[in-house]
Length: 322
Ligand SMILES: Nc1ncnc2c1ncn2[C@@H]1O[C@H](COP(=O)(O)OP(=O)(O)O)[C@@H](O)[C@H]1O
Ligand SMILES: [Mg+2]
Image 1 (cartoon, rainbow, N blue to C red):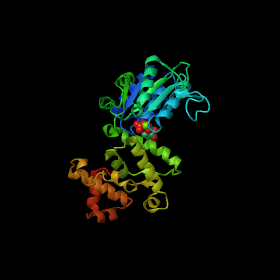
Image 2 (cartoon, helix red, strand yellow):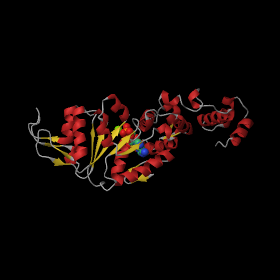
Image 3 (tube, rainbow, N blue to C red):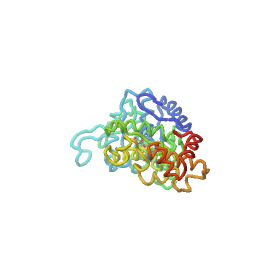
Image 4 (cartoon, rainbow, N blue to C red):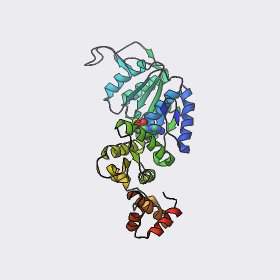
């Protein structure tokens, strides 16, 4: 599904619901808090909210509160006057000023220092701030979108995050569910990501085999969409034509091209996590995999499976395999 200019892949009811909520909050000017595990798509959703709303033509600015030292975070947000601190050789405008009528994303908001939390609280309460070292009071017009993978109520309890700031940020909240809780999204996301990877890596024929698709759909993806993207990229890069299996099958990515952690979840891999399965299911999968591995040669497949050609053909028909 495409919303605005940004593709938001959503097939699972859970992410379709999220998309509906995103459309609603996009129209509002209120501060938005987006929570979710790492790699679920919080940045992506923030951008979507921006593009779905009336601010889409205004700036979309992001600041990563976790990767910058505290003083730099403040200077990036509020800007500074010349001489505000050592190294501040000239006036610099901060995101709150540069953001205009647009959206400002505070990524990893739980990482803000106590000082920055206090200043941000004032911005949210009064919509006003000063540049570091400055006296002129400026107004903020931009919408703030805060992202976090931290359990903020727990951080409040632990004393590392201000409760009053939490309430100010949590006016509207969206939670991006982990990928394992919206499994219907896995393969549509994989197809979407593959399209980009094919062109990025000049591998127009790279394709997921049926066995690889079954494996991706069965895995739990603790690193969510980012882990899926990385696994696909690795498979595309390491299965360059001219090497082994891929040269023979013209670009099909097989389970063997994926990291061991993902492969362990492949249907047929011995794992209690996979749940209980009937003998018929297992048989179907083994036959499908064997046919695929032999490039659909009946005699070779029958031999590998230790059954007659006739039995194989009957089973192939029974299970609707190609
Ligand atoms: N619904 C989606 N549709 C398309 N791409 C997505 C979707 N969700 C996440 N992605 C992609 O997955 C990767 C991780 O998403 P990101 O927003 O950076 O996660 P987070 O900020 O939660 O760690 C990015 O490359 C992003 O573009
Ligand atoms: Mg992120």
